[in-house]
Every structure is written in structure tokens, then in C-alpha cells.
Length: 319
Image 1 (cartoon, rainbow, N blue to C red):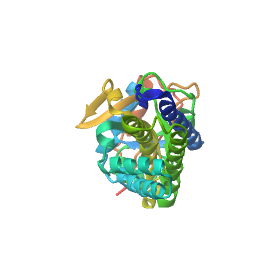
Image 2: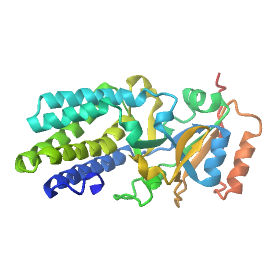
Image 3: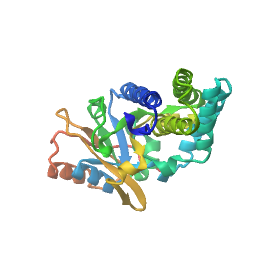
Image 4: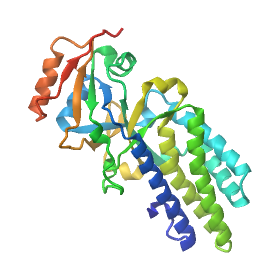
């Protein structure tokens, strides 16, 4: 986990970075386990995307910075910055210095330039009018039902390829839940820094202090802060019941696999093959053209999918 620790740091300081990264990794895995669905999740989309997913068995995770709603990250980030300032003002001098520096970094918006984060959205709603209207081509598209087995945690380490390190996160809604989750990570960050500072005062001086604080803050932003921002939305979106398939990390690691479609950056991640099957059903939008069901069944058959995947037209037209 030592990817954020500068090799020039004294061992106690570098170990503190590693400690926080390990704790964060555990938090992400625990959150993923809590987010594991028991029922199918649905991805509402158009015909071209449906064909691509079925043919190539890959999911396209698009860059969050190029989504239609550019306020999602800023919503959670603003809450995080308020919590950071509250914890700084109530903490010891070393934690205060660290956290006020972190707040300054976040004020310069480093997330888009230094880090990349991509996601694939799913909903807990089956045949839902607003999902058809917003994401399913006003009812002319399709909804792919993905089996819960696709989202079961099956590893506790990182995959060698960055596009295969996918985390599943259920979106939380509202300020209170978002504030509580941010505060847990911020307090852990401050606690580690305070303890290590007090045990190693002679080492935390000049350049060492600056580099150490930068590394601690970078690890917090790259892992926990981005995760919390990508899986939190305002209360007015609660009815979406969204779960996200998320890939995130330092921008440079995605240079080998970043692609573009219609001016938008995306990362392909494999749709794993499971013995139990990945797809439970495919819903055909209520406004889809005549023959859409036959097209889907033919595409499934031509690409080796089981013959028993239901293809069902939804019943109520969407305006």
C-alpha cells in the first residue's frame, strides 16, 4: 500500500502513510460488502450501448467530470471541507496544521487534474418511469438486469490492471449521512498524524513535515475522499436508489487504458463470467420500436448467452 509514501521520508513517517492507506482500503472493502445487493440491479441505456455490452462483455465506466450533473462531487466536497475545518479547529496543533493544509488543497480543486474516477450507474428500480425517461431514451431504450452475483466481493487485494480494480458503492443521500461518513475518515487521518508527530517530533521538521503532510493528504484525497464524493448525493435524488460500479486512482495509472467516445473519457472493465450468469433479464422500453424484443434475443443468441434470459417489454408508455 506504500504507493503514496515518498521514499525519502524517515521510516516512521512513511509507515504512517502506509497505515492510513491500509485502514482506508479496509473501509472501502467494508463499504463494498455493505453495498452488495441481494436483488438484481438495472442499467437503463440505448440500443448501441446494449449491443456493445452484450457483444464485448465489457462495461464502459465514464469519467465523472463529464457527467451531465457537474454538481455531484462539489455537493459532497463542500460538506467534507466544512467537516475538515471543524476538526482542525478542535484538534491538536499538528492535526490543525495538516487539516487546514488539506482544506487549502481542496480549495484549489486538485481532484480533476491529479486523479481520475470513472463509474457505471445502476438502479435498484425495475421498470421505473423516471429511469426510462432520464436514462432509457424516454422509453425507447432498454434496461439490463444484472445478477447480484456480479457484485459479490471476491478479492481483498488490488488487481494488477487498473481497469479491473472495481468497487461497488451504494449511493447515500442527504447531508447528515454524508457528514458522518466524511468525519470518520478525517478523524482517523488526524489521529494517526497526531500520534506519530508526538512520538517522532525530531523527524517532523522542515521538508520532512511538508512531504509527510502532502503524502497523508494525497492518500486521503485519492482513496477515501473521492470514494465518499462519488457515492453521496443530495436528498432530492433519494428515489433513484443508485449503486455505482467505480474505478478510481491517480490519473497516470489510467493512461494505458483510457479511451474516448463522443468526446467523453471512459475506461472499459470486463464483465466477469459467472457460472450462475450475469444477466437476469433484459427489459424493452415501452416506447421501443416493434421488433425490439426479437433483436435483443437474436443478439443474445449470436453472442453465446444462455437461451433462458427473459426479454420483456414494459407495459406503460413514457412521455
